[in-house]
Image (cartoon, rainbow, N blue to C red; front, side):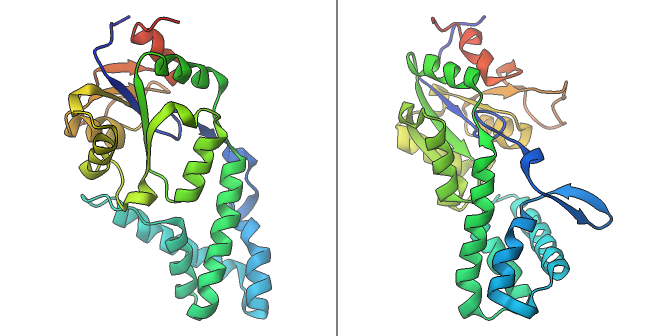
Length: 254
């Protein structure tokens, strides 16, 4: 147990505060194998809008192509964010859908997809209790790499502890993702703190550990499944296996 020296704890969202259950998504056949995806949920809206022009296989292929393109764009050094709405807009454009039809249809697909993502996402009770305990002693904030602003904020509302957080930054609101320093500087501005005042907590070595350490924050890594830090990632200040362990690790009174 280590006595804390921080003014604030800022956390990641997915796989840190909340989990999402991919097993609750529909099963579909994709390139000869079964996968879990929201894609089958989109087919009714697509068929209604496109009629006989709708080809499920062509849509799935176009969507996969666009997703791969976006993944590559996000992986560049500036770590830009590309929203869920933009992903569906690009997919429909690739399929040759007229813009007048594509714009409202892309929004409909976003709502369907994100509706199910929200439904299968929850915050385990021990993590909620941990954040309540932390918030009695320290200020708290959150930064999430998430490609839909509305749903990111709704998921935070669903946890029942949104009011504990001084600031919540969703990458879809900023146009950039962790580990881009700009998203960390955004939380610093909102909370009016210096980097050394903050312990950042997350599960992803590149985004959370390297990103936070790169701007001068302290870092706590949530290490699961006996993972090792990749080469080039600085050592975190603290290693835990779940957010629920953090109050005891910081020596916070109950």
